[in-house]
Length: 373
Image (cartoon, rainbow, N blue to C red; front, side, top):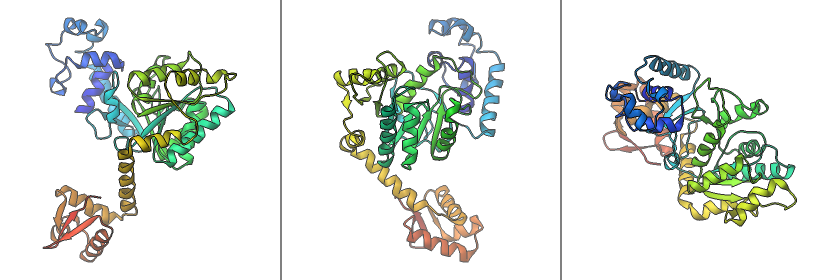
């Protein structure tokens, strides 16, 4: 119901973040059954919601549209992430106009227990700028830092590629739908990201991209990251807007300085003179966060250990663990035998292996407890 309610609200408001935010404060939640006689056009208009939007509140076709979007997403493996989902990045809650929903494809977003850094810059960088962006992405990936960018040509794409080459994680934030590849030149990169990262957007499937979507997208790129690295760009450009958004949302801003004769170094040079953290070597950004946020790196280390312990589980192992979790983290072998349908000899051997691997612990009375790891 929560997802359907959010999709309905978005549909009524044309998926415009600022209008959604204004309309949402007048609703108590999905218990209103998607409309309320108290929410008349005057109240909505007084809160800054355009009249043509407020008239849609009682139109049933927008609930049908929301149902169609939800069904399409289910059939096409697109996750709809709401703000109360565990997958929703907490950092996004602290930006101006945080998205109420995100559409996602690929791996589950895992940005709440580690460092994420956005790398941005010109769509037409110099060869040196491309090399720096790729090496930065690689260094960040090697250090367990998630690389965030917009999957555009140029700096964005190179940063994603560097992270993937290092076996790291990367998140691509699209201005359009997550199932519409743009630019087409990055089609191969798109599918590589789906295998080893996540593609997200606040726009629904089938959305026709408008120029201002990119600026709205950039606030999400910034919002997903503790810091933003500006590699190349002009003083007046989309990259400059992204840098400004990072400053406005109290994010760290890094600048890769360049030659005064390189017009693409105009923006990072200005940012550096205004107090941005200067990237004087490829490892500067990862070193900065290792020094300032060691707690997040420890979380990543623990997460890595957890993944290592859970790798290679058999179907029986997963069935056992799921049952123990359902039982509140502790269960007896007798209960497992009765409820899981696993043969006694197989259950005994798998429980022994799970205990050896430190995933389960054995207590008296043939009781097994899920260990914290």
